[in-house]
Image (cartoon, rainbow, N blue to C red; front, side, top):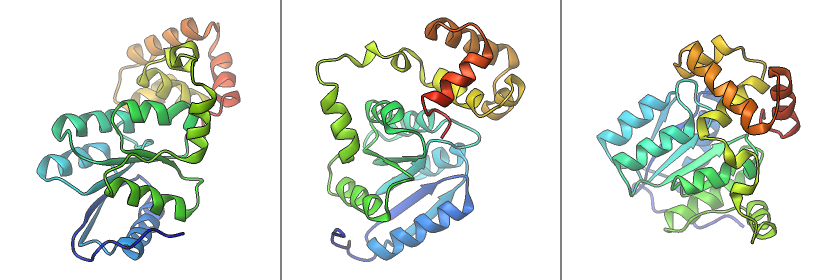
Amino acid sequence: MMPPRARAGTLRFLIADDHGIVRHGLRELIMDAFHPDTVVEADRGRRVIDEVRAQAWDLVVLDIGLPDMDGLEVLKDLKRIRPDQKVLMLSLQPEEQYAVRALKAQASGYVSKTRAAEDLVAAIQTILDGRTYVSTTLAEHLARNVGRRLDDTQEAALSDRELQVLSLLGRGKSVSQIGDQLTLSVKTVSTYRANLLRKLGLTTTGELIRYAIEHRLTE
C-alpha cells in the first residue's frame, strides 16, 4: 500500500546520484508520491555537501557510489554540518555489508536500488514521519545475528575506505584508477590494499578480487 501523500509545497528534497537516468526516475517518483515544493539534483558528493551547508533539506537521498567521494564519507560530513539532517542511503551494494555501516553513521534508512518503487516511497514516508527505515530483509538479517558481534565478521574489521577499495578492486579497477577516482595517491591505495590482504588473510590482489566477487561487494 502506498503511504499517504504529503501536502504540496511543504517539502524539499535533494537527490544525489551520478547517473542522470536514476536521478530523473527518483525525481518523478518523489514528485508523484509527495508533491514537494523543491527537488534539487546533484551528481557529486562535494555538491551535496555544499547544498546541505547552504540549507537544511527535508530529506537527502544519497547514493553510496558517487564518483568523487564515498557516500558514507559524504553522509558523515552531512551529519557533522547538520546533525539533524535526514539522509536515506540508496545503493546497489548488499544490505548485509553496507546498511549497518550506514545506520551506524546515522543514516535515517537504507534502500537497495533493486527494491520496488513502493519500497522506496515507504522508506521516504517512514523517515519523514521521524522514524528510521529498515527493510524486512535487513531486519531479518539483524535478527538472525542477535548475540553475534558485528566485529566477528571479516568485513566488519574493514574501515569504510578499505571496503570501498576492495569493492573497486573487485570491479577490475587498477590501483592508479582507484587513486584517481578517490583522489588518493597510488601509495595510499597500495597501503589500503596491503591492509586488506592482512585483515582478510589473503596474499594476492587476485584473491582480493575473487573475495569481493564472491561476497557480492561489486554490485
